[in-house]
Length: 110
Image (tube, rainbow, N blue to C red):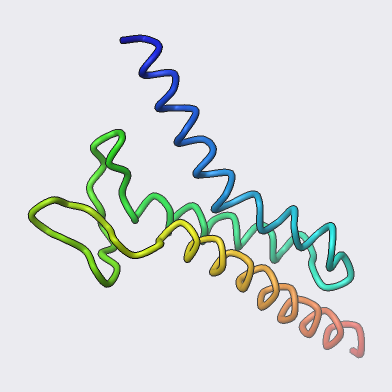
């Protein structure tokens, strides 16, 4: 019983790393001139909210966000929501970084 719980928590941790930390690592390594701390921080919060809102059947957490293909009677998501959370997190990093660099340039002109 204890081994099963440990395995479940390791699986959940890997899902969270994929959805939240992997986009940050990927963009920092390959696009380091296009990302900053502001984008990473906002993307972390957005990715965490999306991922937690998507539900997790391993710990009986219901889905607050019901993506297309959600089955209410089984409470299962057929939409690739983990990949969606990863892509949204990457896009958030890039967009927020762009906005913060634009605002920073505007404040330096004054």
